[in-house]
Length: 241
Image (cartoon, rainbow, N blue to C red; front, side, top):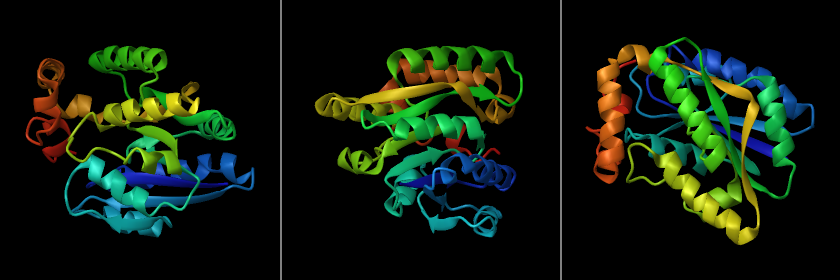
């Protein structure tokens, strides 16, 4: 078995090093099974030391000039040689126990894809509400959080990868297409919850609560117009780090 870990990264010099170290530690749960692991970082046109940090950590670095999360993930996935691809955000820290749970699911032929519940690395009242609501929806509806998605490589390519017309919610779109494929193949999507993925709460401190609530409300009310607009999806694309 071979696992390809794909990490999209734009100006992540503050976070990427610790994420790659967490990946290295967590990957022992895979290498103990004699599985091979490759790590691919897609530099999404960074202007800082992101690609140098990735290369120094031993990752394969690929460049995507168009700043878009879906494009960066797809670019990294094109280099993947594994049976499975794990998409992981550059500011998220998986633990060995989470990778162990993931490996067990990957060994199950009935599993097509999976994700994980989340927990924040810092307390914030709005973050607690958002994460609690998301984790409930994720577990009940089998929605995949973009910070942590594992999927059979063949299945990912069969459904066409991430939708590059979207600047946000690309993981929701992917989930819908993977669900359809799983139904057709009589397979399933799983959400791991015993060891939630630790992810950064930085956006909750970079943006005012009113900005975030306004974005979420607009995305709910005018979903298609919002997620297909780079300007509307400012939380990911205005450069704040």
